[in-house]
Image (cartoon, rainbow, N blue to C red; front, side):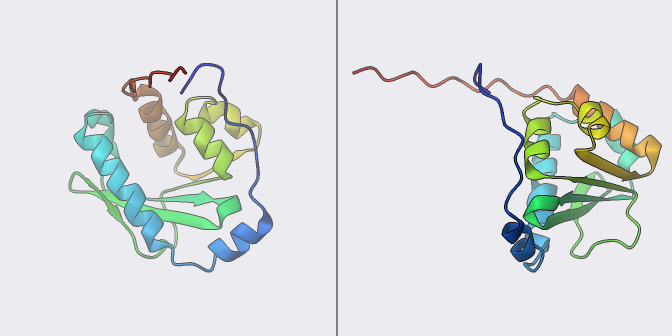
Length: 150
């Protein structure tokens, strides 16, 4: 993230969530599971924490987009679930801006949670494992692009 840039808090128009909720959700699950497997293969996710996820199911809901991604972790892989589990082990709910702020490390999960911008429902210990896992991720530095001058 470039210096001085920050992701503002925003909420997508309600029309987006109304439409998004009626679209198939499995592509979100497939995309997130694929991204998590890629992060694992790159060594970004701590292996000792991954073993604690074995057999667990997760739901990530992007409230203002009307989308959700459901996945589990089995046999060393994140696997998409093509329908939402009745009672997932852990469910994260937030608007898109909160998830983007988390990803960019602009906000931490605790701040978002206490500001009621992130809801975490389910196994408390598992939630703590996920939080610590995210905190331990060392994002690779992306090269900066040269600024073109006239």
